[in-house]
Image (cartoon, one colour):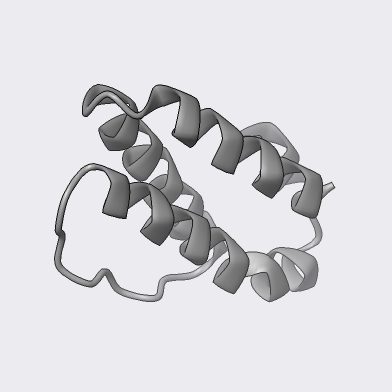
Length: 77
């Protein structure tokens, strides 16, 4: 997904940032309560998603994380 994200035109990636942040928030919620995170640009947003996916998987929610990432991958294209 990261490679595909890097290939997107900047305007498309910027438009998709809210959806990526929503997925990251959903994944962070799986691993327990967290503080809100900042709304960052397209590059850092993908880094937030990677951390969220790792945390969700490490806390025993690997299947749910995989499903969320698959849904997001379909949105990204």
